[in-house]
Image (cartoon, rainbow, N blue to C red; front, side, top):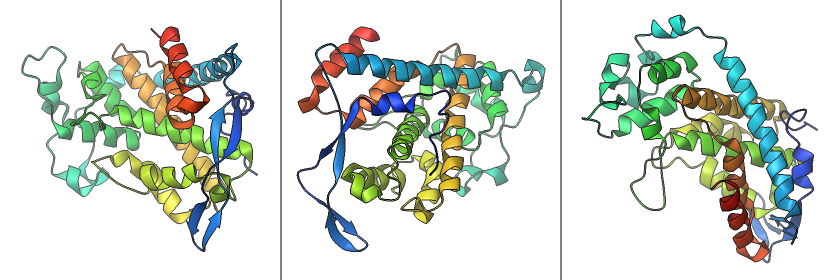
Length: 296
């Protein structure tokens, strides 16, 4: 059985200590074959002394420090002079068909996004190009944008409704959510029976991984694996996917740091876990109170 990614740095076991399986009220219907199976949800063991939250803070802190350590190491591999010589951010053959016709290959075409530009206006193309650069791990190109005073932070959160955002921040959020979720499956040792573990996995698989929607090109990072391995048949490939997710996270950290922004991975982790695993009936209201107090 595969082990959790970065288990020597990130205390996955401490996360397991504050989680419990709760049987769902209704069975989940598996389609191949079509049978009803008992499933579970994950719930936090909330308590009056906030022991669970303290444990989670420790977990989040270790993940934060691990990502930042890799981020600093990766950034140290490149000299500023090397980055400043970049003119083209990517080649057309590197990108999808929809991006080949774009006009944002050259650094000069990003002037509308200069941090001091009074003529700044939002374009979907900017967001999708930056996502693509992260997906393909074109770290030098991203550093080039950041060092040329391109306000990438303006693209982090973009929404056309109150319920959905498709900004560059989705790279960070989606990678982190899937990274934690998959490592929990590994930690519980239940990868061979994902449907019997809990119905949320199947829903998460369909909603966040196998469905491409609203321009979220980042799903291409992991969609191919799950289409080929719906029940985690290729564990070696799963480890490669975890490394990919983790690498994109620390590249994201380094690029934002270049813009003078410190990503608070502790807050991101707690927000991710609270949204995905907790429910009001198991102390969700108390969870958000503690988080707001911690990161006000």
